[in-house]
Every structure is written in C-alpha cells, then in structure tokens.
Image (tube, rainbow, N blue to C red; front, side, top):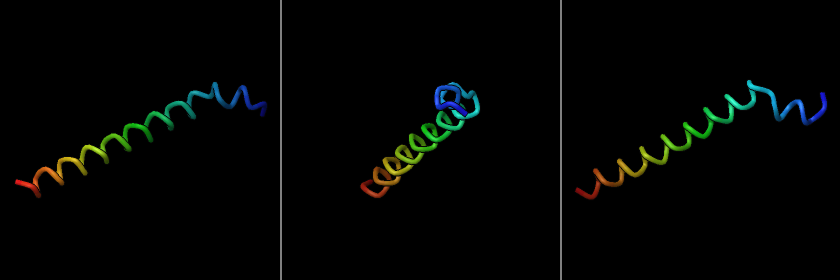
Length: 39
C-alpha cells in the first residue's frame, strides 16, 4: 500500500485514538494515586 492510504486508514486513526485515550487514563490514574498517598 502507498503510505498515503495507510495514514488515511480509519482503522489506524481509531487505534491511535484509543492509544491516546489509554495514555491519558494512565496519567490520570497516576496523579490520583499520588494524590491519595499524600493525603
């Protein structure tokens, strides 16, 4: 496949979105965990 088609692939976009969401969730979990330990 040409790379252009790959970058426009909806599956790839969805996967990258899920990865971003997961990373954000992990950061939030870490922040929450640290906050609860400080209290």
